Length: 251
Image 1 (cartoon, rainbow, N blue to C red):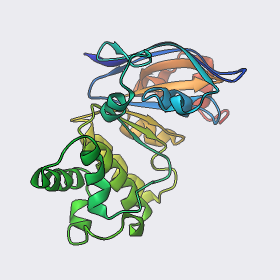
Image 2 (cartoon, rainbow, N blue to C red):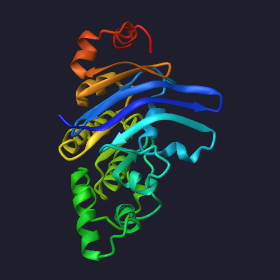
Image 3 (tube, rainbow, N blue to C red):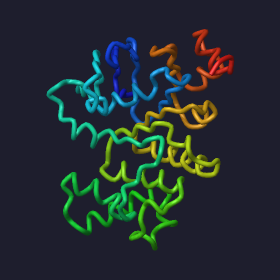
């Protein structure tokens, strides 16, 4: 199985405080990897390393390597715009642009150089269909994305992310603000998307990790304490901290 992402000995500091400590793991292509662990353990911090979002914070220092397709994306010579096109991000709170549903998706295509109107139209429709949203909005594409429900907004953000055909989708607790019905729809969508994308998801919901993830990494105090197939993590974790966490001893 090909590993699309190789994370090797990542250390990260916010100022003097070290938040990630020698984190290493491999993400297989076409799989869903869940990052779990108690609040403040470094899950979202690690996720943001994967598309260089920490570049926006001058107080951050990172050492180690993250290779995507054997290219170290942390190298100073890397094209950050291209990295973020290839590695999409969906945040905890849905963040549609204050634009129409159509323009929310078309915007990313345009800034990536797509100009043909028919191509944009077809890509918008395809992305909405692939995000299970087309049937709900196909007659209201001029409606503001901000008028959609929370679950619809999150699917719109997913449609926006996949419109530019990334290889990887990062998701930072994408269901934490959603109701159970919307959560179930997002989870169903994730299982469909992994046919075409590699997905890394941060979740506090351990049942969600069991439902959707092929592999699960347990983080604690900035360290990766165990990483394995999800079934193995939840039924036979080898590390005591990981075992105690998934068994609810602490959280």
